Length: 137
Image (tube, rainbow, N blue to C red; front, side, top):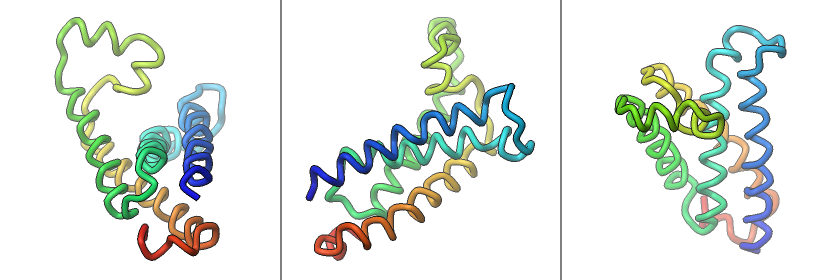
């Protein structure tokens, strides 16, 4: 059962990546709210599914808390502006992962992203993994 869970959460993790990048694409016509905040929201959702992939036996509330803390740590790291990390941030993959500047509103986006992930995960685990749901919810 754990192996099946891992594959499902890996798939969800992978799906979130293009969704998040898509919100940042200049060629896509999206409402301003989604263009401005969607990437950070999908980032937190992706982090949640990555943590869940690694910790399939943890309670979902703990996975959510861990994912949110990871997002906050990465956001807070953006306050560090040494030249070497600025060079790293200006490469495409690390720019997406580490971000460029600290913004308080991102904390709200991360919270929304974790809530979205939990909203997806609770019914998913209830429907697919009923025999382990009491332990993991």
